[in-house]
Amino acid sequence: MRLVIATCQVDYAGRLTAHLPPATRLILVKSDGSVSIHNDDRAYKPLNWMSPPCTLREGVNEEGTPEWVVTGKDGDTLRILLTEVVHDSSHELGVDPGLQKDGVEKHLQELLADHPASLAEGLSLVRREYPTAIGPVDLLCRDHAGASVAVEVKRRGEIDGVEQLTRYLDLLNRDPLLSPVRGIFAAQEIKPQARVLATDRGISCVVVDYDALRGMDDPTARLF
Image (spheres, rainbow, N blue to C red):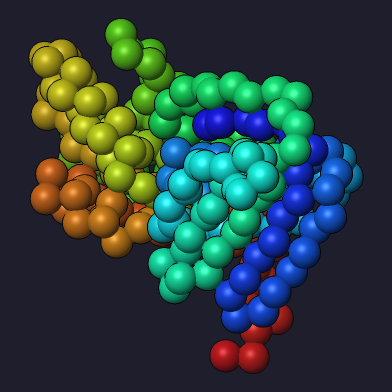
Protein backbone atom coordinates (compact mmCIF):
# COMPACT_ATOMS: atom_id res chain seq x y z
CA MET A 1 0.00 0.00 0.00
CA ARG A 2 1.23 3.49 -0.85
CA LEU A 3 0.33 6.39 1.46
CA VAL A 4 0.63 9.93 0.15
CA ILE A 5 -0.28 13.03 2.14
CA ALA A 6 -0.37 16.01 -0.17
CA THR A 7 -2.04 19.28 -1.01
CA CYS A 8 -3.96 18.23 -4.07
CA GLN A 9 -6.75 19.10 -6.47
CA VAL A 10 -8.87 16.23 -7.75
CA ASP A 11 -11.09 16.14 -10.85
CA TYR A 12 -13.22 13.17 -11.85
CA ALA A 13 -14.64 12.77 -15.36
CA GLY A 14 -16.90 9.91 -16.35
CA ARG A 15 -20.64 9.37 -16.17
CA LEU A 16 -20.63 12.64 -14.24
CA THR A 17 -17.99 15.15 -13.17
CA ALA A 18 -16.76 16.03 -9.69
CA HIS A 19 -14.21 18.53 -8.41
CA LEU A 20 -12.24 18.77 -5.17
CA PRO A 21 -10.48 22.14 -4.77
CA PRO A 22 -6.90 22.20 -3.41
CA ALA A 23 -6.56 20.97 0.19
CA THR A 24 -4.32 18.64 2.19
CA ARG A 25 -5.58 15.07 1.87
CA LEU A 26 -4.55 11.43 2.19
CA ILE A 27 -4.23 9.41 -1.03
CA LEU A 28 -4.25 5.60 -0.78
CA VAL A 29 -2.95 3.44 -3.61
CA LYS A 30 -3.61 -0.24 -2.95
CA SER A 31 -2.03 -3.30 -4.51
CA ASP A 32 -5.26 -4.11 -6.34
CA GLY A 33 -4.81 -0.85 -8.29
CA SER A 34 -7.52 1.13 -6.51
CA VAL A 35 -6.92 4.78 -5.66
CA SER A 36 -8.90 6.70 -3.03
CA ILE A 37 -8.73 10.22 -1.63
CA HIS A 38 -9.56 10.91 2.02
CA ASN A 39 -9.87 13.95 4.26
CA ASP A 40 -9.59 14.11 8.04
CA ASP A 41 -13.18 13.17 8.85
CA ARG A 42 -15.60 10.34 7.97
CA ALA A 43 -14.64 7.03 9.46
CA TYR A 44 -14.09 5.18 6.19
CA LYS A 45 -15.73 6.75 3.15
CA PRO A 46 -13.35 8.46 0.72
CA LEU A 47 -14.09 11.80 -0.94
CA ASN A 48 -13.44 10.26 -4.34
CA TRP A 49 -11.99 7.01 -5.60
CA MET A 50 -11.35 4.75 -8.56
CA SER A 51 -12.15 1.07 -8.15
CA PRO A 52 -10.02 -1.68 -9.73
CA PRO A 53 -9.16 -2.56 -12.36
CA CYS A 54 -7.58 0.78 -13.18
CA THR A 55 -4.20 2.18 -14.20
CA LEU A 56 -2.20 4.97 -12.59
CA ARG A 57 0.11 7.15 -14.67
CA GLU A 58 2.36 9.65 -12.91
CA GLY A 59 3.60 12.69 -14.80
CA VAL A 60 3.57 16.50 -14.80
CA ASN A 61 1.18 19.01 -16.34
CA GLU A 62 2.11 21.90 -18.62
CA GLU A 63 3.19 24.00 -15.63
CA GLY A 64 5.49 21.25 -14.39
CA THR A 65 3.28 20.33 -11.42
CA PRO A 66 3.12 16.60 -10.56
CA GLU A 67 -0.13 15.10 -11.86
CA TRP A 68 -1.56 11.62 -11.53
CA VAL A 69 -4.05 10.31 -14.05
CA VAL A 70 -6.03 7.27 -12.95
CA THR A 71 -8.00 5.60 -15.74
CA GLY A 72 -10.80 3.13 -15.04
CA LYS A 73 -11.95 0.17 -17.10
CA ASP A 74 -14.73 2.23 -18.71
CA GLY A 75 -12.42 5.11 -19.63
CA ASP A 76 -13.40 7.39 -16.75
CA THR A 77 -10.52 9.38 -15.29
CA LEU A 78 -9.42 10.74 -11.94
CA ARG A 79 -6.86 13.55 -12.24
CA ILE A 80 -4.91 14.39 -9.10
CA LEU A 81 -2.78 17.55 -9.14
CA LEU A 82 -0.23 17.45 -6.32
CA THR A 83 0.99 20.95 -5.47
CA GLU A 84 2.84 19.89 -2.32
CA VAL A 85 3.74 16.40 -1.12
CA VAL A 86 4.11 16.13 2.66
CA HIS A 87 4.60 12.37 2.92
CA ASP A 88 5.04 9.49 0.46
CA SER A 89 5.68 5.93 1.63
CA SER A 90 4.98 2.36 0.52
CA HIS A 91 4.31 -0.62 2.77
CA GLU A 92 3.93 -4.36 2.09
CA LEU A 93 0.94 -5.55 4.12
CA GLY A 94 0.85 -9.15 2.91
CA VAL A 95 -2.23 -11.34 2.66
CA ASP A 96 -5.03 -10.33 5.00
CA PRO A 97 -7.00 -13.19 6.61
CA GLY A 98 -10.19 -11.09 6.65
CA LEU A 99 -12.44 -9.99 9.45
CA GLN A 100 -13.16 -12.65 12.03
CA LYS A 101 -15.78 -12.01 14.68
CA ASP A 102 -14.14 -14.06 17.39
CA GLY A 103 -16.95 -13.65 19.90
CA VAL A 104 -19.52 -15.21 17.59
CA GLU A 105 -17.15 -17.93 16.34
CA LYS A 106 -16.08 -18.83 19.87
CA HIS A 107 -19.70 -18.95 21.05
CA LEU A 108 -20.62 -21.11 18.07
CA GLN A 109 -17.85 -23.52 19.01
CA GLU A 110 -19.11 -23.64 22.61
CA LEU A 111 -22.67 -24.32 21.48
CA LEU A 112 -21.58 -27.14 19.19
CA ALA A 113 -19.50 -28.61 22.01
CA ASP A 114 -22.69 -28.72 24.08
CA HIS A 115 -24.74 -30.15 21.20
CA PRO A 116 -22.40 -32.24 19.01
CA ALA A 117 -25.30 -34.38 17.77
CA SER A 118 -26.54 -31.33 15.85
CA LEU A 119 -23.60 -31.95 13.49
CA ALA A 120 -24.21 -35.67 13.01
CA GLU A 121 -26.46 -38.22 14.66
CA GLY A 122 -24.74 -40.08 17.47
CA LEU A 123 -21.79 -37.68 17.69
CA SER A 124 -20.38 -37.11 21.19
CA LEU A 125 -17.69 -34.72 22.41
CA VAL A 126 -14.29 -35.98 23.50
CA ARG A 127 -12.63 -32.61 24.02
CA ARG A 128 -12.93 -29.01 22.94
CA GLU A 129 -9.72 -27.29 21.72
CA TYR A 130 -7.91 -30.62 21.34
CA PRO A 131 -4.17 -29.77 21.28
CA THR A 132 -1.90 -30.68 18.37
CA ALA A 133 1.60 -29.63 17.35
CA ILE A 134 0.15 -27.15 14.82
CA GLY A 135 -2.65 -25.73 16.93
CA PRO A 136 -5.84 -26.83 18.68
CA VAL A 137 -8.62 -28.68 16.87
CA ASP A 138 -11.91 -26.94 17.66
CA LEU A 139 -13.76 -30.16 18.60
CA LEU A 140 -12.62 -33.74 18.80
CA CYS A 141 -15.60 -36.09 18.84
CA ARG A 142 -16.55 -39.73 18.41
CA ASP A 143 -19.35 -41.05 16.25
CA HIS A 144 -21.86 -43.77 17.13
CA ALA A 145 -19.32 -46.43 16.08
CA GLY A 146 -16.57 -44.99 18.27
CA ALA A 147 -14.53 -43.53 15.40
CA SER A 148 -12.74 -40.20 15.86
CA VAL A 149 -14.12 -37.05 14.22
CA ALA A 150 -12.30 -33.70 14.05
CA VAL A 151 -14.55 -30.64 13.70
CA GLU A 152 -13.40 -27.25 12.44
CA VAL A 153 -15.83 -24.42 13.29
CA LYS A 154 -16.01 -21.17 11.33
CA ARG A 155 -18.49 -18.33 11.01
CA ARG A 156 -17.90 -18.29 7.28
CA GLY A 157 -16.52 -21.43 5.68
CA GLU A 158 -13.90 -20.69 3.07
CA ILE A 159 -11.07 -22.58 1.40
CA ASP A 160 -8.50 -21.64 4.04
CA GLY A 161 -10.68 -23.29 6.71
CA VAL A 162 -10.79 -26.53 4.69
CA GLU A 163 -7.01 -26.39 4.30
CA GLN A 164 -6.64 -25.89 8.05
CA LEU A 165 -8.83 -28.92 8.82
CA THR A 166 -6.90 -30.98 6.23
CA ARG A 167 -3.66 -30.27 8.07
CA TYR A 168 -5.23 -31.30 11.38
CA LEU A 169 -6.55 -34.53 9.88
CA ASP A 170 -3.17 -35.40 8.39
CA LEU A 171 -1.57 -34.99 11.81
CA LEU A 172 -4.30 -36.74 13.83
CA ASN A 173 -4.32 -39.74 11.51
CA ARG A 174 -0.69 -40.40 12.43
CA ASP A 175 -1.79 -41.13 15.98
CA PRO A 176 -2.64 -44.86 16.23
CA LEU A 177 -4.89 -44.15 19.23
CA LEU A 178 -7.11 -41.87 17.14
CA SER A 179 -6.79 -43.15 13.57
CA PRO A 180 -8.85 -43.26 11.45
CA VAL A 181 -10.07 -39.69 11.90
CA ARG A 182 -12.61 -38.09 9.59
CA GLY A 183 -13.44 -34.41 9.40
CA ILE A 184 -16.50 -32.19 9.63
CA PHE A 185 -16.34 -28.59 8.43
CA ALA A 186 -19.04 -26.61 10.27
CA ALA A 187 -19.98 -23.00 9.55
CA GLN A 188 -22.94 -20.65 9.34
CA GLU A 189 -22.18 -20.20 5.66
CA ILE A 190 -19.97 -22.36 3.42
CA LYS A 191 -18.64 -20.97 0.15
CA PRO A 192 -19.20 -23.20 -2.91
CA GLN A 193 -15.46 -23.49 -3.62
CA ALA A 194 -14.83 -24.57 -0.02
CA ARG A 195 -17.59 -27.18 -0.25
CA VAL A 196 -16.13 -28.61 -3.46
CA LEU A 197 -12.64 -28.85 -1.93
CA ALA A 198 -13.97 -30.41 1.29
CA THR A 199 -16.00 -33.00 -0.60
CA ASP A 200 -12.99 -33.87 -2.76
CA ARG A 201 -11.00 -34.53 0.43
CA GLY A 202 -13.69 -36.62 2.09
CA ILE A 203 -14.63 -33.92 4.59
CA SER A 204 -18.31 -33.48 5.49
CA CYS A 205 -19.81 -29.99 5.41
CA VAL A 206 -22.48 -28.87 7.86
CA VAL A 207 -24.23 -25.50 7.75
CA VAL A 208 -25.01 -24.46 11.31
CA ASP A 209 -28.07 -22.46 12.40
CA TYR A 210 -26.61 -20.21 15.09
CA ASP A 211 -29.97 -18.88 16.29
CA ALA A 212 -31.43 -22.37 16.58
CA LEU A 213 -28.49 -23.47 18.68
CA ARG A 214 -28.98 -20.49 20.97
CA GLY A 215 -32.63 -21.47 21.36
CA MET A 216 -33.80 -18.28 19.66
CA ASP A 217 -35.48 -20.06 16.77
CA ASP A 218 -38.83 -21.04 18.24
CA PRO A 219 -40.61 -23.48 15.86
CA THR A 220 -44.02 -22.61 17.42
CA ALA A 221 -43.64 -19.02 16.24
CA ARG A 222 -43.36 -20.00 12.58
CA LEU A 223 -46.17 -19.67 10.05
CA PHE A 224 -44.86 -22.63 8.06
